Length: 227
Length: 182
Image (tube, rainbow over all chains, first blue to last red; front, side, top):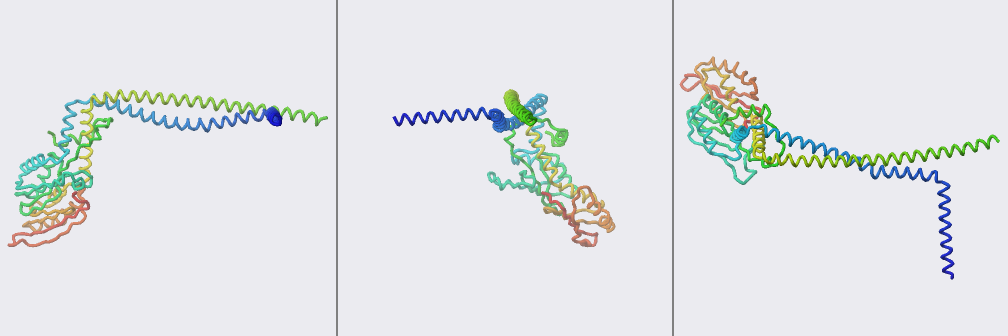
């Protein structure tokens, strides 16, 4: 009975609270509702609008990037379709021949003998510093970071004009090279020549943006020894 | 009496203010909701566009895949040319420097010995005519120094002698360059 009484009291009390709340709400309704509206607006602004604005910014950037990529890819297809297959292969061969992917001793020897004959110099011997095959750090590199092979040639019958001529003739043949020094006494001595090479860049296979050769590149290609 | 009337007006004013306040809050909420809807729709539009562009990319990449050999050839050509340009522009050419010396010396001066290290050229010269050396020292050296891209830092006359047997004159000169050959 006591328990029943207490339950009744509790029920009565909560009903009373509810009535008080309703009364309070009705009394301040004109303030509570607008305040709730404002709070709702602030909540929406912070929780939805701001993140959405941020997402829109990021998506716009992504769209711009993707559109640029699409444009580049489309241009690449157009460029490649407009190029003559044979000419492209020929250009590639000229460039690869000028800067071979490896130390091509045969080409180096051919370049030396041809140039020496044209310059009127007799080659009596040559030595090649190949470096270690596997030791990346031991491969000689110049200041531009491009590996090269150092060749020392022994020459006879060389005067200053022959040497200049020999250097100029070497500049006309592949692989790309430079005379870097000479020690000639009374027509005989030795000369140091560096021959450059560069391994293939395998990342090019995954590159999808192709641009045609610029005017300066075409000009340089024409200046390289033609095959 | 007048004060009673004033009290009534104040209450009405208060009600009007509250009504305005309610209206403004409602307008703000509706505006916020509408803005949210518009922004979400725009976001959806952007995402759809990105999907569409990505789809187009896939198609173009398939076309590009068919031209793969040609693509690699063009890219390799450009990459090699860039490297060649780099090599050619980065280092002074030995022959050019030697040519400067040869061109600047009078015809009757012969160069018998050429010796180089990383940044210098040493030459031994010989002539029967002392006046030729005079011309070379006065004009030739200036030409070498001021020649286009010569890069000469120092010119040293290492020796100057009468040739053995007294048939002419020998001189040894060292040309030191600001930038090394390699």
